[in-house]
Image (cartoon, rainbow, N blue to C red; front, side, top):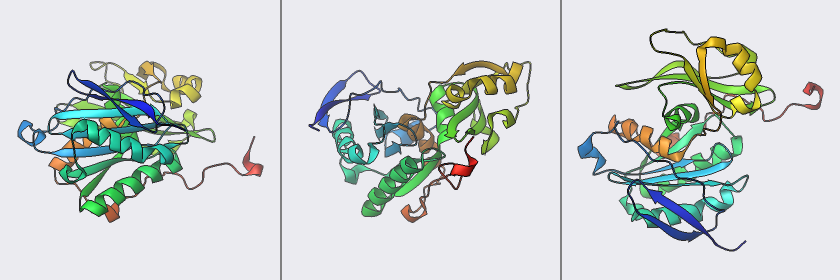
Length: 271
């Protein structure tokens, strides 16, 4: 396949095109950087990688400026990621030596996708003596939704979902229900507060199991945004706060969060 143009966008008004081996680019998410003090925003350069689903999602910050790349990669993440990273770094005006840390989508999600993000982040960080931060994909999904009360659900296949519930406050995200794996009809129910309104259901779990999830959540569910996916932009926004708190870790500690130990049902387990 020949080199195709990839559109890389920043948070400012400029948009540029670079050459990389990648399919046509989807929209690029704008990122709110409120969680990181202004003086630190200007001095920290980070890279974020999110490949837990069908998208290859990358983000790079040069101080306060953030550029993102979000393409539908199918199963071609490993084939496309290095060229796409190079294109993004060029557009951000960054050399690899300019980076201060690397963040990655830790999971849950596609086993192969999680290993790619973790492995690339680990390799890049080891080569440059950088620290890494793993961000949960369900929390990144909540961040990407730009909602305040989120039930995040990702299709886990085999009739199950990965789930988590999060509440945003002035201090950041509060974990209401920790990431877990269950049948849609067994999803933990969040507490309802009549003063704060209902919850927003986000993620492709609501595409795969919408009827069962709506029945389970009932009046607790205010609306559904099933098309929201975890993005590297959301990972980067969350990672800024993590690095600011000193939570960066050695590259050797990077590891995916699977929540499951098998990827398919055995023949005898299938309906």
